[in-house]
Image (cartoon, rainbow, N blue to C red; front, top):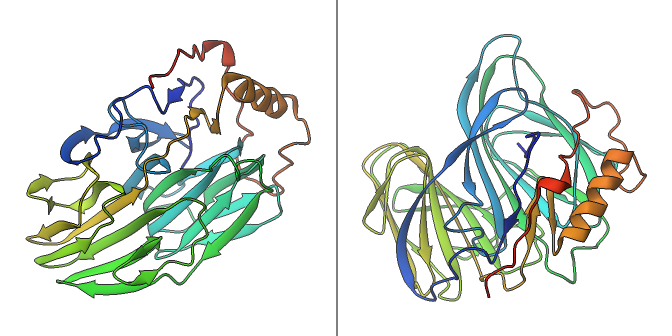
Amino acid sequence: MNNTTAQSTASLSRDCAPCPGQPVLERIPTRPAEVGEGLIIHRALPNRQRRMVGAWCFLDHAGPIVFPDGHGLNVGPHPHIGLQTFTWMMEGEVLHRDSLGYEQLVRPGQVNLMTAGNGIAHAEHSVATGGRLHAAQLWIALPEDRRHMAPAFQNYPDLPRVVSGGFDITVLAGTAFGRTSPVAVHSPLVGMDLATTQAASTDVPAEPAFEYAALTLSGEAVVEGEVLGPDTLLYLGTGRQQIAVRSDGPTELLLIGGVPFEEGIVLWWNFVARNAAEIEAATNDWNSGASRFGEVAGAVGARLVAPDVTGMHLKPQRR
């Protein structure tokens, strides 16, 4: 689940409203996007209203999708810089291969974390045709002192889980409800999945310095009094001690947060950088086949081509 479009528009983190510095309730519709041979997903970040939530700079929600026989996810080799890809799998199985030589199946209840650093390439595809797929993929912008680090990959099969108010809560990243995820991140942030098969209600402890956002993955939830069905991101701002979440029936909710990211970033295609020159260099390296990104052995699907950078049209960022 990555940006596979043949054209791409640059997203500048400072080209939107600044973090309000207080609690807010801002509803933001997701938008459809295509990844992996016709797979339509819902993209929540970046968007015109909010480019980031803490260091989280990208959020795709895929599914639940039922593939017919002979079909499945198929994203060919493509590169990344300056970020971590964070895949949370709820249904189905996807095989990850990368240029470090890792080959890892991510199963329901697991997280795959790939740290791009100065450059990595990977591919993702379904291991069996047909069946269901439900996943969220997020990107985490690496801070200045870590964005040129060596690439890395890790699968996390065991994540902390707690039950609160009828919700089964998985701590995906950071610390929540006194439990800390083992997922290795490089900015103060948090991510959690709240799921229930019946009516449930809880108050999620929050860090006042964090900004938060919620996205319903299935069913319908009520977050701070706002009824939230799928395909709408609810931005919650900062300054909260807790976040009230309830549901009258089966639902699954993704809650993310983090300290507002002070560094200005440029997100273009599958790259996170600080300026257009870095994007152009990465694009040229990938399209020319330079050794910077390496090769993905055994990958299924055609190698993706980075779009023409002349269409990026960066403009000055707001301060």
